Every structure is written in structure tokens, then in C-alpha cells.
Image (cartoon, rainbow, N blue to C red; front, side, top):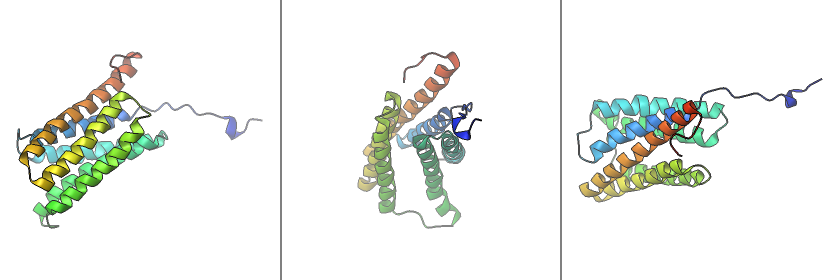
Length: 191
């Protein structure tokens, strides 16, 4: 008689990482086009922050949890919540539901996200180079944004915007590589 311990289930669910990486990457590129001074902050960025950067990443994080991937579950759920909190920080004062965050509060917010991302970057050292680049460049982005807010330097914020565009594009590349490599069942784009 076979016991439950001898039965292995085959995971036939899809890889949720491309969804999370695209939600992160596309939203990051669009926000950082604003940080780079290309266009003002508006509803397009806020909507992307809520629905694709926020909700889609949280869904990807839950899917990663179901696949027993602690790193993916933590990363996607956390960065999905980042996008939702960022939109909240921008919209709640406009609705009269809360006072606007002070400059020092935003510096602390961005610094803490940079510190968290640095810890996650260390985790990528056991993963692939593409993810190492995504998390390494995201760490730099958060610290540049914190410095830009702390100093009030538009130049640092513009530099952060350009660096953020690169970071977002690297996440999009990583997602597309995972999708194409799976579809073609060979390495189309290296990770």
C-alpha cells in the first residue's frame, strides 16, 4: 500500500514571474519617464501603479507562493504593495483623507525600500544575471530617489529617472526572455 509521502505531485501551473516582472518593469519605465522630466505625473502613471504595478504583481506574488517560491512571493507581493502605497501617498492628500507626506518621510520611505531591495539583491546572487541586474539597478534607483528628495536636487532625480528607465527595461527583458525561452523550449534570450 502506497502512503501519501510517496506520491509526488507535478506542478503544471504557469510561471507567474513574467507577469510580475512586466507589471514592475512597465510601470517603472513609465514613472521614471516622469522622473527624467519627460512628462508630468498624471492618471496614466497612477492607474498603472494601481492595476499593473500593484495588483498584477500581488497576484504574481500569490502565484509564486503557491509554487513554494519564497523569493518570488516576497518580491512580487512587496513591490506590488510598494506601487499601491506610492499611489496612496500621492492620492490620499488630494482626496483630503490624509496630510501629504513630509519630505523627510518620503526620504525615509525611499531609503527603506532601498534597504529592502539591497537585501533582495543579495538573494539574486544565487539566481540568474538578469535578476541580479534588475535588483541591483533597483537598489541604486531607490537610493538615488532618496538622495534626490533629501537634497532637493532636480539633477539627481533626473539621473534617477534615467537609471529607473534602464531598471524597468531590464525587468521587461527578463520577463520576455522567460516567456520566449519557455515557448520555444530553448534559450532565445539569455538570462
